[in-house]
Image 1 (spheres, rainbow, N blue to C red):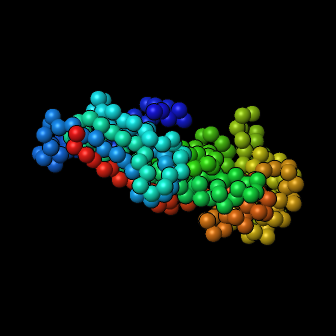
Image 2 (cartoon, rainbow, N blue to C red):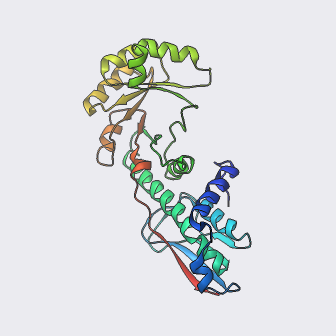
Image 3 (spheres, rainbow, N blue to C red):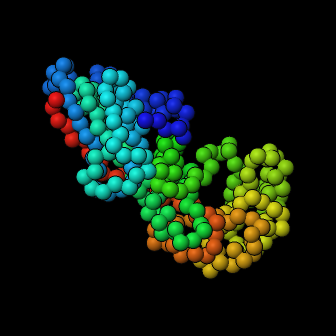
Length: 284
């Protein structure tokens, strides 16, 4: 089972660091003290409640890094919607290895499945519109690539991954640069032909300036629904519009219905509850 979305070295390095954090200096002293070294076992990871599954490749990496001989069998696809008590993967092999890797494997799978689940809920709420849901850079340090992957498993899009893959001119950039025109012109002259330029606006007057100057995307920051509707009229398809700022499941539907192209929400990654998954083990 692979995560084609990732450089495999990135995946392995992250999981190895998580295992190092958990094992510390002496390893799993509880398991080593209570479980015979030769004992074989099988275990099933199952959903305690319904949701969308993501992160099984990271769980697999956790088990395999502890013991390459463990057999990991995914029972559902990444991005699958599952009901309560659904088995999502099976692990067989050395009992000590399974128990030692259990928490790291579950941490990744629970966290990423929670993000995928919340994302799918947002996507369903705007499915009747042309708006696309996307995430932000409000991610857990060290987990951004994986959390953004989970967003994709939930059916949404990724915003920029970092400061180096797209230009996003924020209000503080505009203030220091001396104004919207100055910031936008400087960014457009510096960006390569493959780099998208987006600029944040707080008012409809600022939007009119951006439409006149030209940009790839405009981020409508914390605008009211009425302002967003007017912004769609002003843009008239000349620039793509992204709504952002405090968006949640209670507000996303109405925002999508204004006609904006994108809706970005940090809640997808910073506020998603985990999907409760557990490991049920049987002695072989």
